Image (cartoon, rainbow, N blue to C red; front, side, top):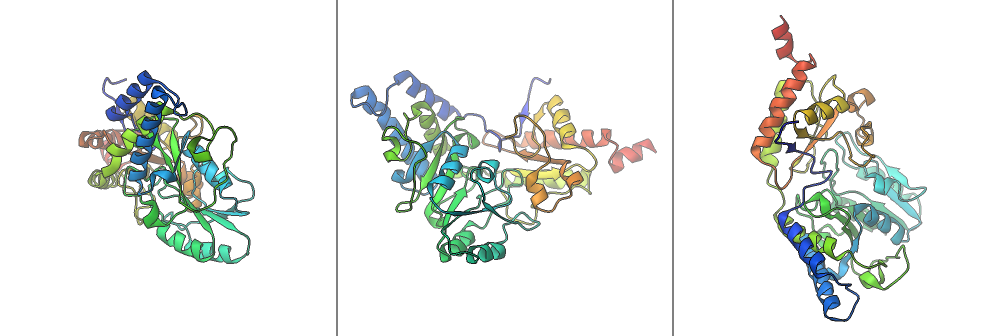
Length: 373
């Protein structure tokens, strides 16, 4: 394996930021239980409270609205169960931690560009007088497509529904503001923007219902029992502050996509007609399976992924692309590339050159046919 490794899978996990590392080490060295009333405990409590303010600032929330969790999956599960609504409507491209969080949920389809169908959402809300929770993600983890959350909120609130938004992929990359969007519940995960794994948050807007899913001590204002992960939370807060300006990588993404389409004109960029995250490209390599691409690029010293990175290391056909109407055989050729806080322009140039070589070796390009002639 090459000595230098180019990591372009930030939507799976972004490497730990130095500021987050330092905050975690300091918290670990200090120790303490934030529920203790002595000096060490009060210091630990101060770290948690400061991090709560940092995370709240990232998403335009009040510190009192932030409930720390073990990550995005717990935040999503807690929102769907804690809202206490009989009906749950979710978009067809949600993360598995939403799609598998409740029984009997109703799926709202998306259009070919990955955007939720607001007309069908409105019809579904009108079909019953039961209390409803609508869950639509802020940005898709595979395609980067941004959902029209403000419009979702408008339609849902007009029908008396509550709205949960999984903002795990959006926060730290583009501006996310709880109160401007108008959502009632917002999920976050630290490791998507350079914080540690194993810590996240559910932001619960003031005065909306929330039923905790576990019993115990009175931590997190009686909304999540259990001693807080002080070191993880401290790292989360530090990363949130560092990530406050988002990612200025749109030009890199556009350069990458234009170059790959020049190499393979038949390739397809999924969600290209929609607003997307500036760091994410989901593209097919015609005739070459995603698993082959991932392995070949890895051997060449470049880390990318095929679809979501939450399936125990398996490369599986993308349910997101299928929901967008992509044919199964084509979906099996789709690759996800995602930049992050420590990416650089040379990473993009290296990927373009390596992707070109792989495509030529696969015998799929005009270049390879010309050479053969």
